[in-house]
Image 1 (cartoon, rainbow, N blue to C red):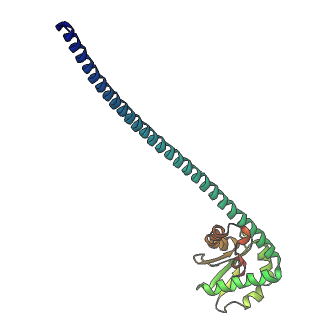
Image 2 (cartoon, rainbow, N blue to C red; image 1 turned 180 degrees about the vertical axis):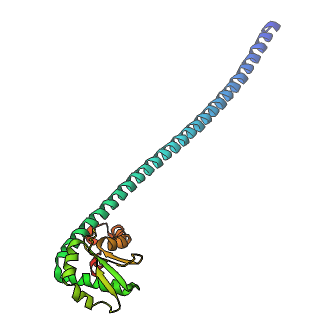
Image 3 (cartoon, rainbow, N blue to C red; image 1 turned 60 degrees about the vertical axis):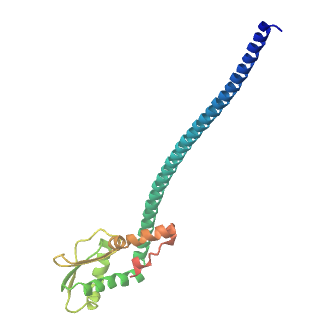
Length: 213
């Protein structure tokens, strides 16, 4: 083998070694690039997933809050409607009670006696609706006999707007005991509303003391 051929073989061998080295380097670079690309893709997907989850959670919370607000509005409306239903039922009961003279008239008189004993003033005025004023006027003398002897109690000639009960006041109107249906209901309203919240049924209300005490 002459020197030319030896040189050619040496060059070819060298070229093959270089080619092999570059091939290995290229493979390593490719693998590194692929790993980095895969990692960047994984991180991007993770960020996108995190963003999507955050947006989904936010959307869900907004929907829940909107539903809660809507439900609260509905419950408030239902609570108000229940209160109105109860008051209408009580008004009907009051009307029926006022027609039961055997129970209503003694109750009415007991309200007058109780108020007369509570108010320290000696001169008092009793007010009621037109129907009850007429009923009281018919028995006024006997009612006066049940009142404290040192009290001067007169029956007002002016009617008041009420379903029933009486309003007893000092003659100067500075002291008064409001035992009309509306006055007693107003004082009992917090308790009535509490019963509504506890039972959520108008039939469950305990309203006996509105008429009996």
